[in-house]
Length: 233
Length: 136
Length: 248
Image 1 (cartoon, rainbow over the protein chains, first blue to last red):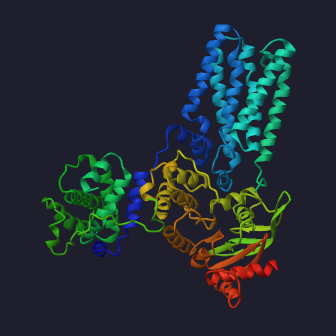
Image 2 (cartoon, rainbow over the protein chains, first blue to last red):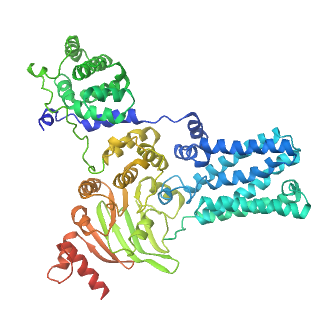
Image 3 (cartoon, one colour):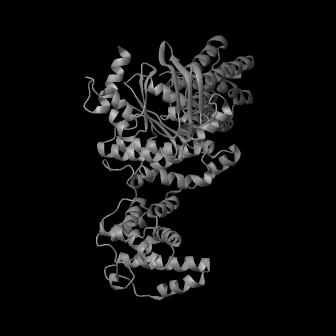
């Protein structure tokens, strides 16, 4: 090629292009990611947080729609549907937050400096917080009694714990969603059978300690399942 | 794609088109700049030139891409040297920038000391040949 | 020594995947040869700090991967391409490589340049902003390599990296390996003998969880000389001869 001979030997065009590409390709983090960097003190964790599948816009909108429908049904029928469906929706979001069933590059994610457990913790807490906030808003707007409004937060913790544990152990987000929904449905129906009210699972304050104990147990299972010595192949 | 199409694509935000434009034109631009600037400065000016191309491709009017690019490179060289306040180089840069005649890369080879743009400037040269090949 | 293994074993259930391996590996390209199921992947996963050994000692980059702090330090200097690296289909090449640069804690100010350099280094500059789901298998392999080298690792682990690459890409890839091996420890597991001859400064042959041979490619070739071992090339005959020897 005649053109190559003309390039001055002491000018490194590869380096020049990398300089151009650095600017052209560089991504500017959005306001949420910048805030997360400040709070979490880790750009890696912040990036992992804003790429959570169940925190993407579509998912959040779907969650809001379900809760909105629940709110309208609650106002129409008097049955606290928001309180009944919020834990299930949150469980699905948690199961799709992170883990071997969600992350196709899970094996690689386990070899990086930002630990997979930290990513899991941050993502699960963020999904939980967002669902709790949306659920509270929907609950308040539907005008149910305060005990019901706040009462579902505790069972929601337990259902989310179950979904996360199942998703992590089974290495499948769908298994987690199924476990969370099934567990919650059974709990609600048992409340109906035992107390004659669908809302028993939400309003019965004596259930709070068992719920929280169950959630703590699930957290331990998740911790055990993500320990470094886990390997199956 | 010819240069006009490439510059239009760059104006539309196509980074791959900028890359092709770079592989096609950076070599002769570097050679010309090197005739009046030290190597390190050539790299900086060339980088600024293509960043200016990236930002300003929408301002390109369809005539003589080589002359347009050289015009940008000259302006960037003058800016660079003014920022560096290097009077000696500033003189030669001013001489360079003072020449307002748009350069046609096809004719400039006649000037002594200024290398001819490659005859195959239309053929992209790979920037890096580390791992590449099939499937592109 | 960047990798020090002392009598390392690894069991998965009833399977003894790695059965007493001792190795010391410094800079250069180290080829890990062996048939499928020989334990190469398990050994690599232990070097990648993904699984700990069932018994034995491991030191990586001079630190103990069993403790949290040192492990994190090791991981900053680690590059790993698993055999089946999953991808995020909606990410672009740049987003994927940047994601792992951040998770490997490359200093934020250096990330954009490191990402651009890694993407160019594997020859994907013209696909930088393409979504991963639009790329071919060979290109995805190169994306995997780009994320592995984005932090300029001192220890680079590649599990069957040439699978899915066509011959031309394979040649270019070996050149990249040699280049990387000049300053880092590169461990390449492969069942393709020709990869080793072309790129490796040292080769170990693994069979049934043990190291059956450890030496230079030339030494492995010599083991096949004058034998009736199967193989189209001298190195292949050496490989077959060693395998036949340990299995007899």
